[in-house]
Image (cartoon, rainbow, N blue to C red; front, side, top):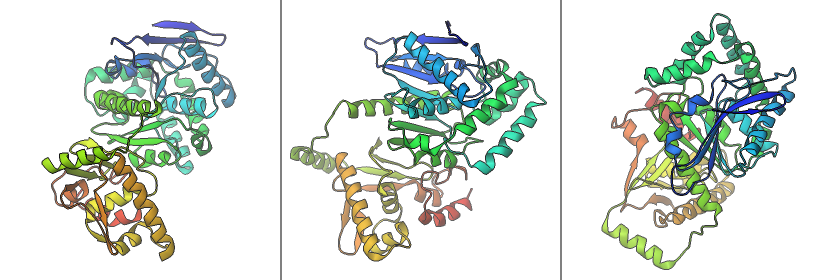
Length: 431
């Protein structure tokens, strides 16, 4: 472990070099409240092709520093530690992966204009929290902490953040909490809560990946999803079989999601052009003519569309694209009037027809970019999906008892719209 001594703090950190022939860039990791850099140990090996920087935030782990009486001074101190560290290590371009208070650190750094990371990954952390819930939640934790030592606090926290029953993983978490500054823990919790701001989020143009945990006790995906709408360039995915600390519960699954996101965004930023060449469309048709395509449209928890197992990427969160394809995936061939009624309730006919055209054009463009320009058909009365394809929908499988259902907290977490309420009611009866 390395040490960086600053005027008002001492920062302990590690810099791991890549083990491949050519580095795939640098990733900086920011840990959660009360924890330390050791909580990244299970996920770091999956990024061996990249340089990796981890450190104990001020007042965490082995790092220490002045704690100021003013919240803004404390944010300035945390920001200064970060900036001095990456300057010391001569890091100019990097990806940011964050958890807990590390997420708000990232938000402060980016929204204030201190850094422009290549990508920003948020692990199981809401950037929005209902104000009427914050105070009782903090009071409950404060009351518990009065009775507990650092080790006992860690033991109390483990079932709230870890699903995995591996004793070694539990020991890592307990050791981190043993080093936590419990005397200022609640102050730091308030520091984080008081900094939450939608205005800061809308300033962030960095490609942002939000990874939510399927079985998160404190922050169900339906809550963390509320943050997504504020990021102009984002993707959301669910990490299955995991509690809050996805980097510990499911490190490989989490790392693969992050690497895929980084790879995609770097390809886009390098100016890779999606060529609209006639012979490619002919090639796609020939391929589809030799093997029937299986199209999955899933939205039981997080929305995802795949073709023969390959995920269809694009701006799904714009112009009701995912709602429209999800509706067709579940209901099949439908009268346009039914689509108008379900997706645009309370709109007059002129407005809804225009909104439908905009949504359909956007969806067709998205599908065309993925070689699926012949998936959707319409006539004057109906809209439907190509009957030559095998269409599978996890919601239909759930209703038919062919699929295990997610928890109520994660059910339709990515599709909080009116027309799924009836489906939700039917499914909740089975949970």
